[in-house]
Length: 151
Image 1 (cartoon, rainbow, N blue to C red):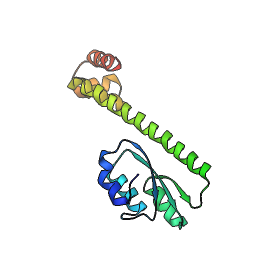
Image 2: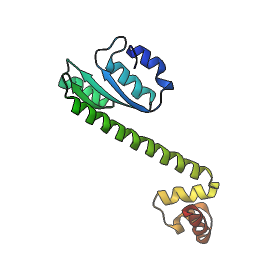
Image 3: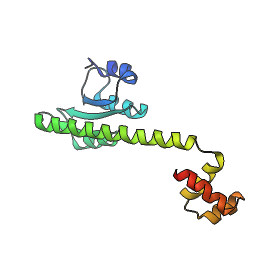
């Protein structure tokens, strides 16, 4: 827990991925300010906004800024728990997606430059003969590179 939005933002870069419960009216930076800063810094944090004085435009603004939900006080504690569980589910998906992206980037980094050229042709939907013609190599060479890519 943090005593203010400003204190949270000062420590945000050092925090583990997680779920953040923000009140619109907090000491220092408001919940909306913190939400905007989290989005701008691309931090691995999923936010839930709560408020006692909300309206539709504020809720829309919060959702556009990246909040997973917007709860008005007094809220049902069961709803809050359900929302937090949904936020953790989303966090796990985001982390799994990031791990897949990193693995793909590492795999691509291990490819030879010509294999990358063939991969770009395949991604563009080109057939082996067209790729071979554009790279000035034989279609058989493209097939070998393609087999390497699949491995």
